Length: 344
Ligand code: SF4
Image (cartoon, rainbow, N blue to C red):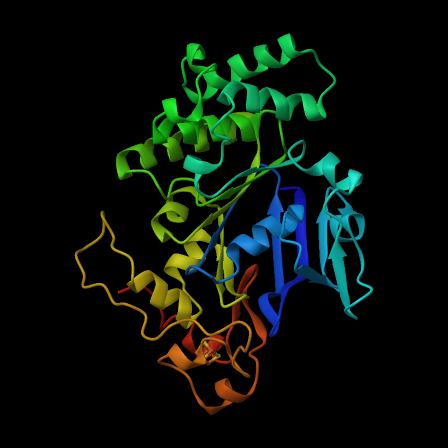
């Protein structure tokens, strides 16, 4: 499959009064055309910053490290959307209204934002908000944009007479579908979906995820699916990247990550989630809590919670090891533990 997006050594840090928060450090990812990459991990592990970092939709105190690269269709979006910071050496500052980046946002890379319930402006009709997004990028009349919205509503299964409703007149599932319609409005090549079904009940969640897969296949769109819910990525993703405390700790195909687990954190994550189809098991919470990213541990960031930690883990940052072609683990003992780990 042809590469659509390559994220190389991406580091995004937030400047706060007390210093820096190292939210994302040295992340490497690839997404091919039409493929789904699941980005999983606990809340606060840097998944959303990584996803939003691709389109550089980040708060004004976010800075990207100089060496980071986000190659999309052969162009480096970091070079395109940022400039060297005058204040902080080694960092690049995001240019919020960069006209070059605007050509990519929504038109080529669209987003399904976290919490679709609140993503629409409550005082504008939903249809008008989608029309506005289309007209901001496409040279078409309002009437033509309305036709496109009708088409999109048919695709996502909302009756077209609901186009003129306000967000509060939609159910949670309908708002989520409308958000998906908006993400599809300009035929993007990549959708970044941030916890797209978290606020929905499981039945609606299942239906919406099914529709997303159907639409993605039909429109041949690639997707980065950001979620803390391992069961969602297990069903949908071709490849999985597991994040912990700003680091990418394991990456591989869904089968490799779930069945041939090569990182203790992935094992802990799998043991903390129930399996509906598999055998009954007692869930195990991951002891402790993630580190403070303003002051991350010196060696492996998972060491204080890892049952396999040894002295070296507390002192030295682990290397990224390629266990098998395309299957990576950031652990000092990846090779020794490979084959021993896995959800119980
Ligand atoms: Fe655990 Fe050490 Fe591997 Fe970190 S490097 S995950 S602490 S075994």
